[in-house]
Length: 171
Image (cartoon, rainbow, N blue to C red; front, side, top):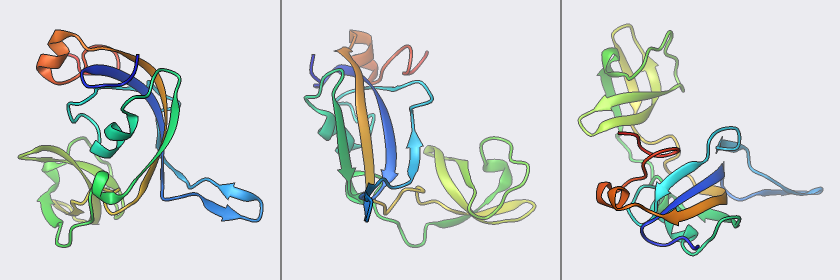
């Protein structure tokens, strides 16, 4: 079965930044930013905007067992960095408990649009200055994907717009 609209796709990925660098010994992979290799694969409902548009487009037509390297410019990934995206927020708006906030640390902050990733610029006792750009904004991203399985989505998954069960959303 091939990946198409209304199929549930389960895949592993390795995410790195930019193209591979070349040395005298040959191609050298960029440092890994994220990977699902040591965890459960990711599952999503294809054609419903549950993953980055560029990655979803590149995976269309693949089948279980296929591998593919996908390079996404910022416009098809997390977008360009926005100037003026710094914000001072009360520490109580951060999701989770942080023992000590330090510049450069990645945190999750509660917003009116839900949880957002942010990076600490400066931390005080009661407030924290955050860069609200996604940490990968402005970066060209390289995904190495391996398709684990592809199946037809259930009527309920299609109606809800996301995967249910293992690797997906649980009600």
